[in-house]
Image (tube, rainbow, N blue to C red):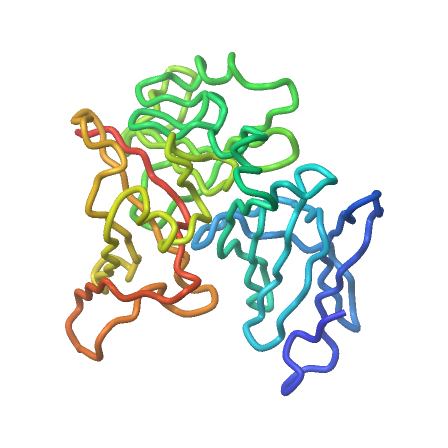
Length: 296
């Protein structure tokens, strides 16, 4: 049990609940508790949005009260040849994904298991995320979804088009958005934007939500982080090499994991300018979400 803020509150806690223990690791859920009520806690997979998805952590998660982060390492197989290491930030209300990395227990362990190369249904490309493709109608996407899928209206931001969150297998997978004029949304509405914050989705080079900036530069070159106070101070990441350099029919926007461990992932000089840019960043700086957008 972890206190929310030991200096100001002795009644609010983040509780780690062991659901079951297998041979090599446990399965945990986190619960927010206070003296009045206990409500099941949810892990925020989509920083800076209103959408939350229930999530369990398999492994042996530990909490650092100094940084308010939960660190966890999950074994893909009992022998421990490949691990998925994650960090989630607790802001007192939600758990937000900070980073997600694959780590070899033995040399080439993750590649040997095939987890470094995403499957087709979890691949991020210039024109799609998994089964969702730009230009596809909502009705066409529905025909491809698993039976347990659910679609819920969601908001991407105050100045963003209408969107739908697509969930299946018990977790939010991605959001699909439509034209500003395309309301109400129908099965004939065409997908014009796809937003993914689920770390299971990656590019062919193995980069996706949760990938640390220092790891992504090995694939795409030097990183530049920036934000503009006139654009809601949303922090973006660009690399020297584009994720999809040969594509002209779409564009990509990488959002950082700002407002988690620190307000910004980048380290900026003191300035009153509304626009800030830097190539210096914190060790925890990572990609929070990837936005695939059709060019108008």
